[in-house]
Image (cartoon, rainbow, N blue to C red; front, side, top):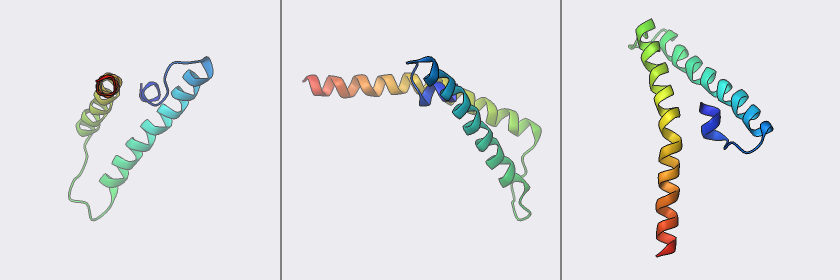
Length: 82
Protein backbone atom coordinates (compact mmCIF):
# COMPACT_ATOMS: atom_id res chain seq x y z
CA UNK A 1 0.00 0.00 0.00
CA UNK A 2 2.80 2.39 0.80
CA UNK A 3 4.36 1.66 -2.58
CA UNK A 4 1.10 2.48 -4.36
CA UNK A 5 1.15 5.88 -2.71
CA UNK A 6 4.74 6.48 -3.81
CA UNK A 7 4.34 5.12 -7.34
CA UNK A 8 1.26 5.41 -9.48
CA UNK A 9 0.02 2.34 -11.35
CA UNK A 10 1.64 2.89 -14.73
CA UNK A 11 3.49 -0.22 -15.75
CA UNK A 12 4.30 -3.60 -14.28
CA UNK A 13 7.77 -2.33 -13.36
CA UNK A 14 6.31 0.63 -11.45
CA UNK A 15 3.99 -1.68 -9.54
CA UNK A 16 6.83 -4.05 -8.72
CA UNK A 17 9.09 -1.19 -7.62
CA UNK A 18 6.23 0.17 -5.51
CA UNK A 19 5.79 -3.15 -3.73
CA UNK A 20 9.50 -3.51 -3.01
CA UNK A 21 10.07 0.09 -1.92
CA UNK A 22 6.83 0.15 0.07
CA UNK A 23 7.83 -2.92 2.03
CA UNK A 24 11.27 -1.44 2.70
CA UNK A 25 9.74 1.83 3.91
CA UNK A 26 7.34 -0.12 6.16
CA UNK A 27 10.20 -2.12 7.69
CA UNK A 28 12.25 1.06 8.22
CA UNK A 29 9.33 2.66 10.09
CA UNK A 30 8.88 -0.41 12.28
CA UNK A 31 12.64 -0.64 12.94
CA UNK A 32 12.70 3.05 13.88
CA UNK A 33 9.85 2.58 16.36
CA UNK A 34 11.51 -0.47 17.88
CA UNK A 35 14.83 1.35 18.10
CA UNK A 36 13.20 4.20 19.99
CA UNK A 37 11.56 1.73 22.35
CA UNK A 38 14.75 -0.23 23.07
CA UNK A 39 17.09 2.64 23.93
CA UNK A 40 18.04 2.57 27.58
CA UNK A 41 17.14 6.18 28.39
CA UNK A 42 13.68 6.13 26.79
CA UNK A 43 10.69 6.83 28.98
CA UNK A 44 8.25 5.31 26.49
CA UNK A 45 8.23 1.52 26.29
CA UNK A 46 6.32 0.08 23.34
CA UNK A 47 4.29 -3.07 23.90
CA UNK A 48 2.83 -5.51 21.38
CA UNK A 49 -0.49 -3.67 21.50
CA UNK A 50 1.29 -0.41 20.73
CA UNK A 51 2.92 -2.02 17.69
CA UNK A 52 -0.51 -3.16 16.49
CA UNK A 53 -1.78 0.39 16.84
CA UNK A 54 1.24 1.83 15.00
CA UNK A 55 0.77 -0.70 12.21
CA UNK A 56 -2.93 0.19 11.96
CA UNK A 57 -2.07 3.90 11.75
CA UNK A 58 0.43 3.22 8.96
CA UNK A 59 -2.22 1.25 7.04
CA UNK A 60 -4.80 4.02 7.47
CA UNK A 61 -2.33 6.64 6.25
CA UNK A 62 -1.49 4.47 3.24
CA UNK A 63 -5.19 4.07 2.43
CA UNK A 64 -6.08 7.75 2.88
CA UNK A 65 -3.02 9.28 1.20
CA UNK A 66 -4.06 8.66 -2.44
CA UNK A 67 -7.43 10.34 -1.83
CA UNK A 68 -5.77 13.34 -0.21
CA UNK A 69 -3.30 13.52 -3.07
CA UNK A 70 -6.10 13.48 -5.65
CA UNK A 71 -8.07 16.12 -3.73
CA UNK A 72 -5.03 18.38 -3.52
CA UNK A 73 -4.33 18.00 -7.24
CA UNK A 74 -7.98 18.74 -8.06
CA UNK A 75 -7.86 21.86 -5.93
CA UNK A 76 -4.68 23.06 -7.62
CA UNK A 77 -6.08 22.40 -11.10
CA UNK A 78 -9.32 24.21 -10.16
CA UNK A 79 -7.33 27.27 -9.08
CA UNK A 80 -5.36 27.22 -12.32
CA UNK A 81 -8.62 27.02 -14.30
CA UNK A 82 -10.02 30.19 -12.68
